[in-house]
Length: 303
Image 1 (spheres, rainbow, N blue to C red):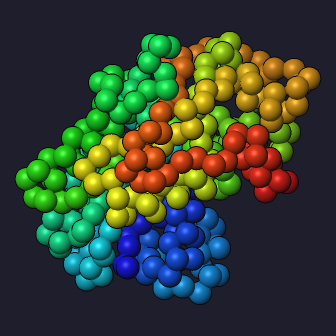
Image 2: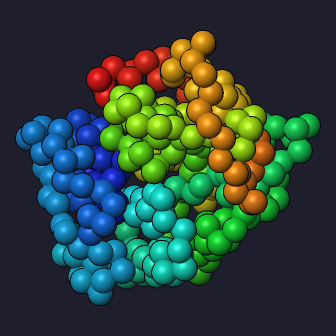
């Protein structure tokens, strides 16, 4: 199968490329390298599979031409939400790139488009009695990033209904693992602090809780989504909440003093965990890496 991975030089994208090549797929990476790096593709480039890397912005008109030339069956669009960027220009580009990908898919009979949605900013604050949250709950987008995520999901539905472009959208919990930038998540920030000896901070009192899911588990869900879960938004998480304080002690040691506190963002979600029931039914997927095991793997790699 020929597969495009837009944003394939990024954290999640590069791991997905490794897996696809290992399964003997033909892979085209499309990335403008604004946040991803070629270093993330070092393993992929050494595997000897059928890999082509295109230094190209998915917003560019040339993207549609490339899709027409290469005729992928599946397009993974992972480049619309770069880590650590929440400015207006990035938000506008997110919609632009998504439309460009969907238009190229429509014009060239791409079988399916698969993308990722940030679950925290999409669901917003959820009452404790509704956790872990299921996909049937109404979205309550947080900030511009949440609104853009909802827009991306709605565009996918429109193109499916009006143009028969099939999709799966994976609502991701807090993904962590190797190759993640320090500004890509709290696990990566703590790991960088511990390995490089730079000061860490905790936003607020550290009692905010998140659902942390390991990169290998997430990649497995993406691979399954190429042929399953069509027309659905599907939660990818563990259903387990861990506070930021607990995460720090897991990574730094039970007796490690807490880092200094900085003010929490006014729109920060207090707690979130995702129920993976739909993923079990439609993707035959379930997380298998507990947090302690995943953190141990990450720390070994960073050392």
